[in-house]
Length: 479
Image (cartoon, rainbow, N blue to C red; front, side):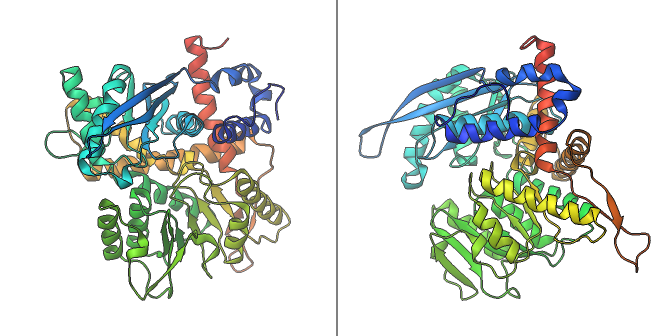
């Protein structure tokens, strides 16, 4: 992979994310065309700073409870550290380093002045009362407030941290700092003078679909009538599903940590009313298994991918490594031709390799003049960048002391996702070793062509790396 030595087997999630970037770079022509950039590799894979702290809080019975708190300030070359806070029992340093590392390149792809970071705690909000969550957030911010600020580090929400938690965190920050620094957190409410941004809750899900629309246009396809498998049931999945429904696609599944909810009959798919009910269910910490509707089948302990007879588009929107090589095989058998991640690193390395192999096989068929088996995969750092993009737009609005209209924010989001797609395609064509081409689509349409599909994995990784590495060089972080 590289003549630079890296450790393995200590932080598996982080190492997976790191190795994917290194593989994309070393298998491309980036270091041949820009040999000096290779010297950045051992620097960029190390966080600038890791903050770890104790969080002591009181439960409703008066007992002292202790959790671990973290903030990984990974890279500030392009702007202040930017990335969410995750409250989940699985949180550890490996997961936060992986998320922070991915965030560097995702944030660079947006074209906005934000660096990469991530944080959180192994606190589990699902079995806690509102008062316990409030007390925990206040205790967490008691330490974190020393290390963040609008021009230093700007956290947001993630799994287990929604608008309610951001409100508690901001209230604690304001009291501790004795100032109203609106730009210190994003994902704030748009009401009550909190200076949040419209479209922020919807941003990751909407942005995912805007990215998919660009992929479909490139492939010569339309989203209307396509069968879509979606995993997850949080903000990303909910708003991705709503946007799909608005565009005439057929949403066939949603899921949560306990199992998958599958549509029995494609003529009776998920509706807006279903998604609204699920949103209410999640606010009160319920599970999809509580939904009693003859239109759906509940599959405990399952993910959607192997349980649908017909799939055109698969959108992993739950958590990391939720799509493996066997899932890809099942999806392809069901007719799937596009996978785009709404979750961070939603596919295992084996799944990514299989999906990239399917793309290459299609490209070979294009070269032969008999295109068949179209398949394309988009990694989360490109396709789910909409959330952090609108967070950066929220920072801009806070700096201006203004709130933009929903229409303006949505238009900016769409433009950013289109730019990410175009840059990823262009840099894939520029730096990867594949020879991409096109052939006539059919004798009936003599002027129509079918294009080979560039690697969005390599394209996104290369685009983000070059931007950040060059900024680091200007700052003297490597030489």
